[in-house]
Length: 247
Image (cartoon, rainbow, N blue to C red; front, side, top):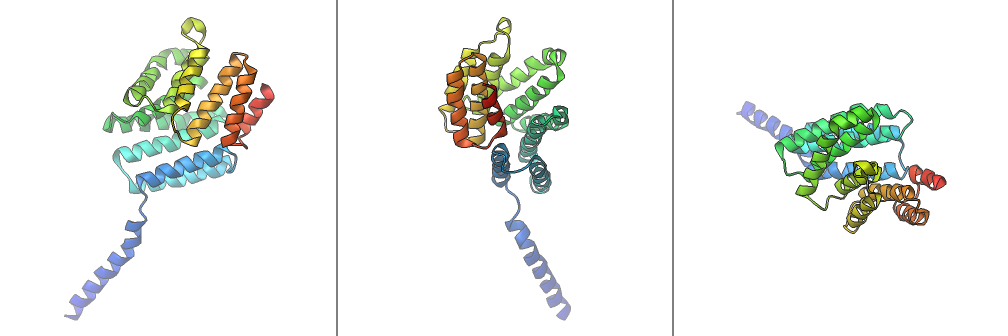
């Protein structure tokens, strides 16, 4: 009788000890929100590169411990894309490639599970695009059609995906006219994307690309107008401040 009561007491204590773990287990929405918050604070220079990377590594561990399947692959892909973007912003851009390759691979694992995720296709496209920028013309020629396929699929699934729209616009903004380049068309795509209600970090990337497009057109007034739109969101971003000096 005593042994049975003791046994039940031990089980009850173990259950009680596990309750906080169940209550505070990381959810998909919490992890996604954390990545967004880290992105915004990093863009606005409120947190250093090294601290952001450390926080992302810690978050990755929590994601892998608490989530699985599509949720795990999508969030890890998103986290690694941010790591790659951070590394790409430094003097050693090539350090970004391993993170971007990891991001692309995880995004493709995510869409293998759920092919209707527009944003997972977008992450694969964005990571792939950043890799192409660094690996040069032969790599671009070999991979551009595949990356464009990811962009097209993302937009087919969600024509309002603003980050994908920016990627699609960059094709027209950056390509020579002989290969389909059309800066005005790229600007139109981004302006249409900005009509939608989008996350601050997505609005930043759209506006930053828009500034570059107007600069390429030698329309400095429009470029400066959009610089001010960026500064309303992230007034301390060093990239846009540097861009002002170049205009």
